[in-house]
Image (cartoon, rainbow, N blue to C red; front, top):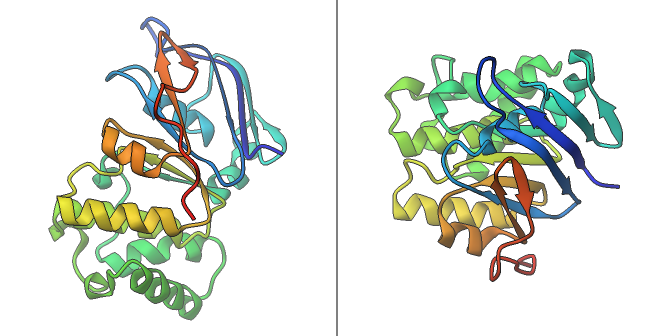
Length: 226
């Protein structure tokens, strides 16, 4: 069963021409699907439609075996599909790193002690434990990027939706992020303009053009890394 199955998705912002014009997308377990396309093609919009932050004007969203249409339908989807925003400042809002990472588990019903244990486990796994008590807004852009991933992984999602995850990362941290993502079991949808990153990480690639997803680009299909 596909994890995500989007059929005939259409979308336009009020008063604007359509961005999506019948886009179809299927994400299977274990895939790392890369999405490419020019700025403004609708890649970020498509990620937001997957988790119900935007609603298509036409088409169907199926996630984890069920059709999702109403707001209540997407509560489970947002727990099981973790979206890492393109701009970390849109995602980090607590005073400290530990509080940001703990926010999701606490909202899922974890006790304070359980949430702090998750914080320590996730930050150690990402080699970010030294940032645990740092003030979030004083982090560098690259540090914020990695912390946003930590906030999502703390929710133990089945799917990762990554919007330009290498933005603001230097070469060293991009290499760290790549190795980390390759080690994770989750299926992923990755929006990225970085061809090297896509080649290294993706198992399949689609291009969003004229509101539709085109077949994989030549040379961008790879076997899943062991």
